[in-house]
Length: 126
Image (cartoon, rainbow, N blue to C red; front, side, top):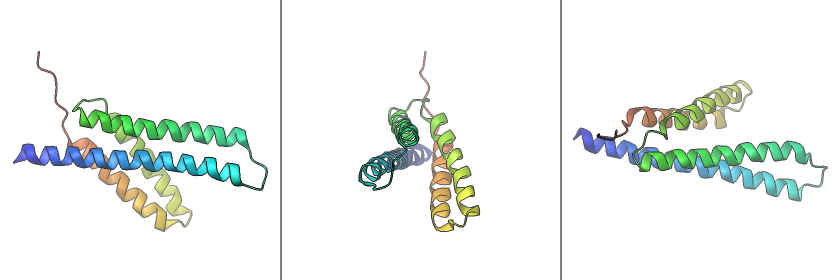
């Protein structure tokens, strides 16, 4: 029974990490479209930095999901670190009065951290 529970948590971790990764990449697409359609002057230097972070973050979360899918250890640390950062972001959003976005972000980050920490990766036998 415990092994089935472990596999369920692994599958949920993969789903949540993929969701987060594609969501972050979607934000990058939004930034590109907004930058191209904006009537105001665009700070391309700033937007290019944001895009690099968005692409790196989204790809990193998708890579972490691949690690969970392959039952490897390399997916845990990036998943936990990215979601600890998301908890900090949610705290600042909440302090800024954006509680309706901070609470779902904090909940998603907490669930992902729990799933990432609770799934025990398989080690190679020698």
